[in-house]
Image (cartoon, rainbow, N blue to C red):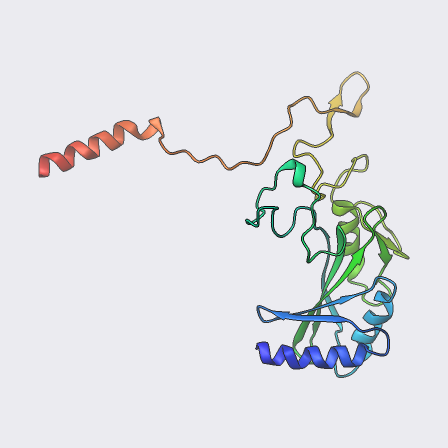
Length: 229
């Protein structure tokens, strides 16, 4: 499978060379190409229309926040990065945000991942809805969750969160408890938004080593084993 995608990688890079020299990587049996945001739309059109490639189906579009991605300063795996290292990028990341596209060729039965890096302060890129209509809701989700803007999208508005929601929940700097809470006010007879009233929490797994609810059962089991011995 890897050899197949190595050959596909050569074919893709050769085909797109007239637009730009794209970076291609084959890892874990998957092909990923990195393209500039300026040429993304034109490249997507070629990926769809070229008969040898024929990526006619878009499977997913997702926004990614690469803050605290890769390795920590001490070289260890950066799982649950400390707050002060939240915006540290690994050497493999060009910017904080990226828009990622997963494409499928039904005719040729091959797949590709396309990634384009976006500006840190104002992440925006051309919409690919004119190329694949199925990207419509995917781009809306990436906008809602990560805050990526898709220029030319026919209806770019939130799709998962509420109309009055503040912020983008999948950004690494978004607090786990949120920024506002909502409740129904009987006097105003409408839903109102207020600052959160609970303390900010961190996502630390809680492992119960000893549970007193089962202490008596465990003791009875131990006594039975002792009697049999």
